[in-house]
Length: 350
Image (cartoon, rainbow, N blue to C red):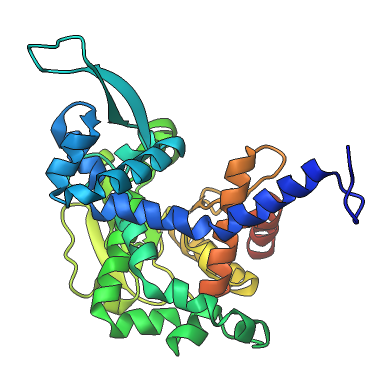
């Protein structure tokens, strides 16, 4: 096979070009995802009660008939990417019972985007991430960020740290809290297999728990367990507890309410290495202060752990993207299991 000037075969060069173009066009993946969420396509199919044809979908959307082909283009692309299944159904016309039509059915991915049901939905996460113009604006500040010694990319774009920005912009804060709450609903799946983690505990503190969605799920599952949501005063000031659930305001870098167990759900990835160790040391102090036996304190950490050896390629790719996202937003990061173990040893030496 012929080679080019770099010694690569034509096949290798075309594959390389495809890789470059795939990343260049990657922003269109986000655009298509935003489209199905904004237009509530998963909800439409869910409410339809069965797979929906393209003509039925266009009719429900009430968009111009001229956009029929556009809708077809988007739906087939998202089906190719696993958001819908393309199935064959028989027409309802009595005069032609054997007519076959193409229809779109929900998949596990699109089911996660259905809003307003008792099942878990991560649509608010998608909306927060893709409706926020900060991400697209940040792309134009990338060069400036690489020459800035201290500030995260988001801080350069926003003009202030993210937490300060959210504190002064209630609409954005509401979107952020809704996103975190919807993401927390996924903990229901973890509880099915790891409920023993919370057994025999008397108290648990959810550090950085926001509006309490995660610990509320735990409190309902374990009604005898005293659950505390610990977050910044401005986050919890208008939130009311009930039964075995209460809210406490404070600063996790100063002290954490004592408890048998401390829950850190997607907290450590927001912070630098040094700050992670500070948080974990305060967690250690909190569980030691609560427990008569200092070896019984428990810190429960829920994080995305990078594991290239065991994870599938797509999962590893996602975690690397999350790592970049956390770093440009807050100078945080996703970490390996080895790195997490190092933090625990530094904060809780044997």
